[in-house]
Structure formats: C-alpha cells, structure tokens
Amino acid sequence: MKFFLDPGHGGRDPGAVANGVQEKDIALSVALAIKKFLEENFDNVEVKLSREDDRFLSLSERARLANAWGADYFVSIHCNAGGGTGFETFIHDSRSTKSVAYQNVVHPAILDKMGVRDRGKKAANFAVLRLTNMPAILTENLFVDNARDAALLKDPAFLQQVARGHVEGIAKAFGLKRKGGATSKPTGIQPSKPAANKTTTSQPKQSKSGDQVVRAIQEFINTYGFNIAVDGIAGPQTMRGLVRVLQTELNKQFGRGLVVDGIFGPRTRAALVNVRAGARGNLTRVLQALLYIRGFNPGQIDSIFGGKTESAVRKFQRDNGLTVDGIVGPKTWAALLG
Ligand SMILES: [Zn+2]
Image (cartoon, rainbow, N blue to C red; front, side, top):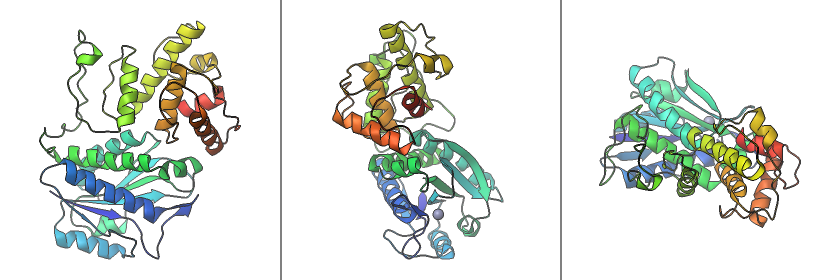
C-alpha cells in the first residue's frame, strides 16, 4: 500500500500563523511522525511525502507527485484559522465512494486521539483533492488562531497523538497488518469488553499502541471497577470514565450522593469541590489526568498537587479565559470536563 502524505504549505507560504504557531511547521512535523509510525508498525507500507523540509510546492505539483507515484491514498495535512476550534476533514465535492468510505474511518480515528470538538466530515472543491487521481482526504487539525487550540499544537506530545490518530485511521481503513501482530480491527468494530466475570487485570492483552500516559489513566479508571478499553486513546470513553471516578470520589469523600453515570451535568457540577496546591488523593489524580489530556503538562500523574500541577492549572486557566489563581474550582473543573 502506498500512502502519499502532503504537509500543507511550506517555504514562503507559512499557511495560517497565530499565537506563535505556523501551520506549515505543524503540518510537516505531523506528516513526518505519521510516516515514522506507519513504517515502524505496519507491514507492506510505502510512505512518500510531498515535502520533507520547509519548501514551497504548488498545489498542482503536490497532486502531480502523488499521481506519478501511483499512491493508493492521499492525505493532506493542515491547520485551520479564521475563528473556531476543533477538527474537521474534507474530501472532494464529487464524493467518490472510496473517499467517503475512508473518511468515515479516518476522521473518527483522528478525533478519538485528539479529544477535541468535532466540526464534521465535509466536502469541498480543494485543488489537491480535485487534482489527485486516488482517494484523498484533507485534515484540518485545530485552529492556530484559537489560544486553546494553539496551546495544544505547541505540545509535541499532542502532535504525536494527532499523528497516531492518522496512523490508526489509515491502518483501519486499509486493514494494514501490524508487524508481528494481527490485522487492524475492521471498521466499525468496538474494542471487545472483557467478560463480566473477569477482573480488570485479566483483560485480553492489548497492543501497546496509543499514548502510554493515557493508558495509565485508563488503567487507573478501571481500578474503580469500570471496564474501559486500555488503548491509549483519550476519547469520549476515557472522559466519561474520569467523570465517573470524580463522581465516585465526591460521593466517598463528601457524601454527595451523585449517580455515577459519567455525565457531567448540573448536579455533578454543583457537587464539585475546590482543589488547590498541597492537595493529595484521587481528585488530584483526576485533575492531573484532565490537564494531560487537554495538553497541559501536570508533571507526574501521582495524586500530589505540587508546583508543576499548579503551573499547568494556571496555564490552562490563562488559555481558557478563566481567573488565573491556580485553584481548581467549579469553573476550572467545568472547562476541563466540558
Ligand atoms: Zn492550510
């Protein structure tokens, strides 16, 4: 399988620029990471980039290179701008059957790793999509002119997640075979849940894919008797799991009597408590997990609210227009969970 990756812009064309982020740089580092992950983890893949450094290429030249190589799939990588937040993908207006099918697999896979707002699967008459002969997709990975999105784009760990999302999506869409392992799970099949009589420690061995810190967070959630997939993907399941842990702890420590349903609604919001520097325990661990998932490095996820966690809280508050006091009250909790 031949995958052609097209990091948008380059050279004299920086793409969107704001908050100290240049679209061309993000696109290139994500594309290079996708190439690396695909080649390292899957058999029978060939990956080519339209550019591997900071150079200008016309849109038609990008398409020409992919067509001449005979790529099986074309992936153009971009960031958005113009006011907004989140992730979206485009295929060409003509909506070829294959482009639609691959978008249906690749889009959610990336979104799942990013844990950001879903702006939807779209179609447009973009030149690289129109001029390429093979199925193609263009991904718009967050908004450089949104402070919160830009903060994520500045975090190398987050960019790795973006790249892994692309890789997981491509692997699923094309049924790629993992090196020395099984074929990627076919489209649309959720990770199997362990049988009800099994404990979390006897879950089937999962592949070591995904973010290691996120895997540890998922294992922590499962110590509460939940059975979420330990896949290193900080998606909606992980967020719901963290809300359930939060609800359990609020009940246990403060007698709140919440329904442990993983839904962050008005009752859970009203039951929240302030957490600040010096705190210890699983509320702090949930806080650290949320900060990490949002792209703010809390230091070790160790249940101890120390200096690194406090500076991550302050940074999060600053980027989200909250009062910057380093104290996690209801508004900060809500922004982290929302
Ligand atoms: Zn662009």
